[in-house]
View: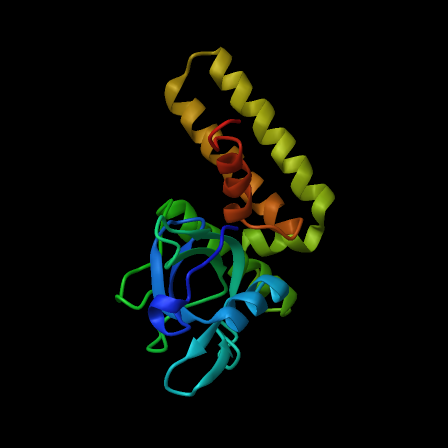
Length: 204
């Protein structure tokens, strides 16, 4: 990271917080040198609170932390663009962003990923009502992986038969079960997308 000019803001520098998955701007905070170093060392975004006159790690009370992905310095070396993975709503008023926006990037897929996560928690809580997704998680990763293989084969078969409607149905089933498998492995759709994005970085 290039040298940062903290002098223009009397020791503080604005930090624009952006979701690395959806690319939504979530909030604006300020960092001093100590806050920046703590952010880099802990991997959790930490600001300098101008009202409390101290460092504060986002989510230290709510649990809605911002996990650091990348920090970029602007052309004048006096503003930061911080890419993060948010653990929940960012604004203290309970909204996804400080502008009251819904933090969605891939739209429905993003919402579906959240639903799968909730169904996984449903199964872990021993709920009397068990959904299809919760039952898959209960059966374990081998069963989920088997479903992905089955759906992949069915998708290929429909592709070879040139049946467009059935191909789309099987493709949807394949994608859905792959998303379940990703969560069964402890990952999220955002992390898969992050790998895809890294493959398209300049020079790669």
